[in-house]
Image (cartoon, rainbow, N blue to C red):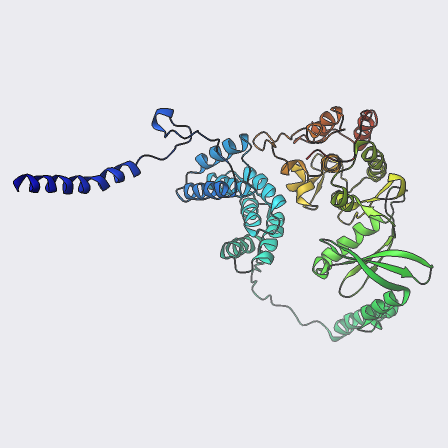
Length: 496
């Protein structure tokens, strides 16, 4: 009986210890990427996959580092990830935040500009760049960015704070010194009546000289609006951009089709900006070239401005790429010959386009093209800084253009980006393999077939960050492009 009890107790102890053994086995360490094989399980190691979950996890780690103010470590970590082709569009915004923590305003402006290029509807990048501009004393560019941020997110407290600081720094309060009243002798009555007569005569002269202005009815602009609709039949809307909507219309007086752009009212609400816009539009209206869409006239109304363009029956390069994916080099070369000739003429008239992109290149029959929408074009100035203003589409803007400096080399930069996108189907910044740390693009000839390697050198020389190291003219760009012959096989489709 004692033996039976001992056996029963032994069995109970074995069953009691058995779960503990399984629990100990379940607590073995998980597989660690990059650890010693002896410390791993017997499963085969796998290369890390930078999928959506991995990117979200990495962004969470970086956000934690930013909360702990480890700004330099964030910058090193992101650059290391990018060097391994682990890309995420949120990295640009995180870089801007890290540089802002270190007080590097130039790097904040550049990284925030990259973030805006990939996510133009995110107000945080505009807020960061506005803060950097405010620290540098660039109040005009700061106001442009902070107004855009508040338009995207009116409830942003940080944007409101920056706007308040900007208003305080730009507000000028006139202080008039109070002078003690001087004691004057009373003038004779005839002197008073003499000056009254002179003032009356001046007022009569001004009234007679500008009688038509004084008699203009209050609804003069409205009558002008009615005149627009009397002369033009608006047929349909054919486009919409950052500046306004474009309509196909029919000129009943001259019996021809036209394209009419109605500029957004908020762009010309200020009398100063309206006059500046009119001045630039009149300047561009002087351009007459077969490769440029002509502006016929500019019409002013109370609520907006109307630009009447030549109507071109074709499709934009942007639409062609949406349909075909990319364009063969032989066809792209012919299209960009027309683009280069149009830009050469504009530059010869000292006019910079400032917003060259596939949406502003109209392709006609036989692969001829016309450059259009010189709406934000600027007059070149004779100094080292160039025209000073921020204008254009962020994804196609040269580095100096993002800082408000524009010159003809800025158009060369945008021209090279358009050629790259036409041949590959996407801009260099979105291609896997783009080296953001060194700002080195992935060669186009390695992304799609039929692209001569000489194109890579042309695009690389046109995208230099320093405009003085870049190709200096559109003429030089076309000279090199025209010398490149298509490869024997020039297929229409990409291999990816």
